[in-house]
Amino acid sequence: MPAFSRAIVTFAALALPHTAQAQMAPTTSEGKFVPCAEGASLPALAETQCARVASPLDHAAPAKGDIELFVRKFPARGTSQGELWLIAGSPGESGASFYPFIDTLRAAAPGFDLIIPDHRGTGFSTRLCPNEESAESAGGTALEGAEWGSCIGAMHADPERTQSFSITNAAHDIELLMERLGTGDRTYLYGVSYGTQLVLRTLTVAAPAGLDGVILDSLVPADDDERHDLSRRSQVTDAVGRQVLRGCDARADCSRYFDRPVEQALEELLANPELSKPLGPKPKYLLSTMLDFPETRAALPFVIAGLRAGDTAWLDHAQAQLAKVQARFAPYPQFGSSIPLVSLISGSENNRRPALTAETIDSEEAGLLFTSPLPRHLLPGGFPTYEAGPELGQLPESIPPTLVLHGKLDPKTAHDGAKAYVDRLRAAGEIELASSETAPHYLLMTDPDFFVAQVRAFLAE
Image (cartoon, rainbow, N blue to C red; front, top):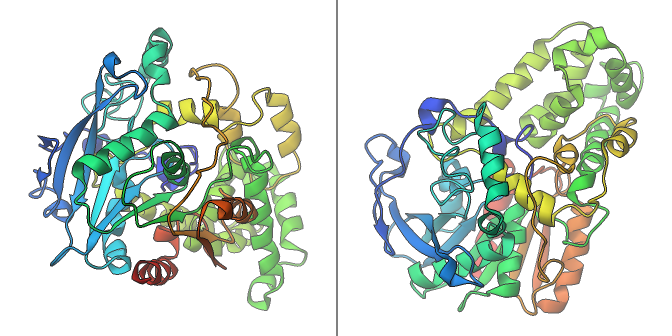
């Protein structure tokens, strides 16, 4: 979920109960894997191994001190055939965003050890705001109340430390972890959403030795892609939403609930405050969330039809489905997006329109049916930013064999943006784009059968 997406409307940001957030990090050993300690309380993690590794706060200036990186390993069943390293997205998501899908990953990569770090600023690794994002704080790992102000203040007060939580430093972390903890057997590197950006940055500035292949799930746009960058997330989401509604128009079993095109029906619904009231204060945000998962996306036309008739049954059903998504992650203590890290990286490296204003956003979104909160979180003020280095916009000089998995109904990272990026990366090495006709974002989660088939074939080559 690992989401490259903002916390408010994606699975990657669903809030966890404080009881889950308050659990402590597992006992680990510095620099080597040892059995994790949570097996009694979390059976899904019973056979896992954990490690903590020191890494420079700033790889360009190691004397500034160290941070700590947490890594969890799900050993292969039987003799190991190699390692698959998994890099989460958002960019505030920890490796816990993979834990509910370990069985799918084992089916896709049979015989592989699954190695999952919490990249810097997330999960059990060193946080941007250690006090406010502590499991023992008032809001658990999420910010709550006065913690927002103290966290933002601390980030501004120590800009040298804050600026070290960059994509480039995180890329050097990955190379360091793979060198320290890897076995030297067959080695593959997977990233999802923002994790694809982090993996490509790693290949650009600190390519791991002996890497046999790369898997990129829901590829983010190129750093210099102004058409699909985060400031235009609402336009990407709206295009997919309208495609879904037109699909309903083309099917008799769906269009029979409407006496006009579904896009028009939704426009009229949103223009009626009384009928759209059940969607909450930001109805377009909730509608866009329903595009994130196949189950809720399928229900969307019926939600619209029901609300036009004053019936909330289908909306209630869709919201119950969203709650089920949240429940899959709730057992894992470090799940939940680090908003400080999301804000820092998104504002510093993933906004091609730094002069964006609220008035511009209002004007651009006025005619949209589906919108994202992300563009408004890119507006100046609040969390600090850093000046991106020369690595921003650079492509790797070479890449190992690479598989890109992308959904044609991805409402976060546009399929045509991914296709354009793949075409540019071909100059660096062998790369294949495998497109799912129906998947939204994060194919490991949303189209597991497609994911397993494609990854198994890729690893068998």
